[in-house]
Length: 135
Length: 135
DNA sequence: GCACCTTTTGACAACGGTTCTCATTCCGGC
DNA sequence: GCCGGAATGAGAACCGTTGTCAAAAGGTGC
Image (cartoon, rainbow over all chains, first blue to last red; front, side, top):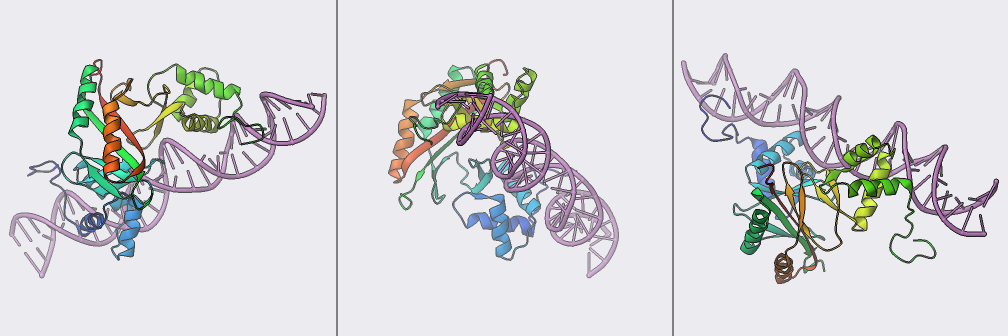
């Protein structure tokens, strides 16, 4: 927001805390809540404030570096993600997550929206079930 | 859950409050938060406690009489719904909602889950955009 | 290395939606 | 009318999240 500012959030400094959060996310492939991540960091010796964890995750979500999923109770859960558009197949038991793609579904969603005259369309799609280990 | 119990939640008495909530939902076709419904009832002269509104909506959701959608901030929003499986096309501007069906999508979700060995599959799918009036 | 300026951090308070508690009220049957 | 259990509601409690603000840390130019 200051003088020599090129990109969008160029004001993002690579601090110890931010690196720690990113590193922590890299270690899992399932969704974790902000508080879980906070605890995990604590346990690992990285002392990062809860506010900072929330702020960092939010920033990463805005930058599409993590996926956000709302648990049934409304709690936000985060997970590192690939940069292509995708959806999730999530195990209700252990949380194990698989990224899936469905070009046909994307087209269908767009088509349906257009038929009703909707513009600037986006969508959410998640599949839940019990993975082989939890069944 | 008591003695002569036929259906699921037969312990549901048709009280004034429950009728009022159901009636209120019938008047809209877009998603409303529990607190909005509470306010609406108040304004309409129906004095119903907030706890009761929450309880009633929860019960109706369990009975699949209403759809629940989590807003981005995690707030739960409710809407009366048809009894067939469907998804929603929701306007980000005014909240106007259209129920849509996509048999192909259902099949795709099931197939993807099966390919990964997942069982007891369910899914969520919502489409967002700006309706003709809000575009 | 050393100021200087800004961003970032973190302990804590505040917020807001939701759930819990429990005394009181209501419903339905006898 | 009376009884017993379900339902209600006012308020407290809960809990995830966001705001506050003084202190600490990066980055830059010297």
